[in-house]
Length: 265
Image (cartoon, rainbow, N blue to C red):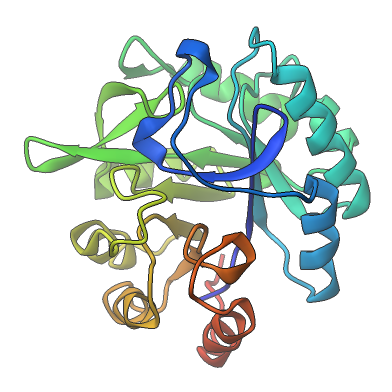
């Protein structure tokens, strides 16, 4: 298990939000925390502890009045910590290299690949050809419906027809270096993890998987460690004291480092 930090940028500011509240309408989101610091501050903060592989997400869509402000924040953070962070939010083959050249280690993609509820393998192949498998992360963030976890796109607003399953993970692992999976129903709520999803992901384990969503206590980390078979990396957002929560960042980092095992690619 590794600690994977996050920097979420919305309306030009670093925030922690309730995931399912995010809406393109009026660029709205229910906020848990709005930082007085910029994204570059957090990038340097993670750099000092040698933490790599975190994700930085631009939460406003292209076309939003705030997208350029989000992008400026992101580029400053990438310059502050070259190679230290992954980036997602509106990534396409046309702009992916721009973010990589700015310092991102990987680009993170969802909506470009999932169109009209389906995976478009031609688009996925184009991304792979453009940036290479070793620099592509697929965001398979999901919400529960009818007893299954369905991948959601467009800032977690749109359900696809694709559910997260062993078969799907096997298929998509041929295209990506890692998976990022937010349990969007609990994202930003610090109310406990989606144990059923964690069990499934932990039993797979072919390429690195980062789980995010609902971690609110060290008991949640215990469950994630055990049920995920120490195969999952973890992101903690709103629950961290960095973002106004009650979990001490230093203690969380110490806990994860004590697992003393990294996922093997």
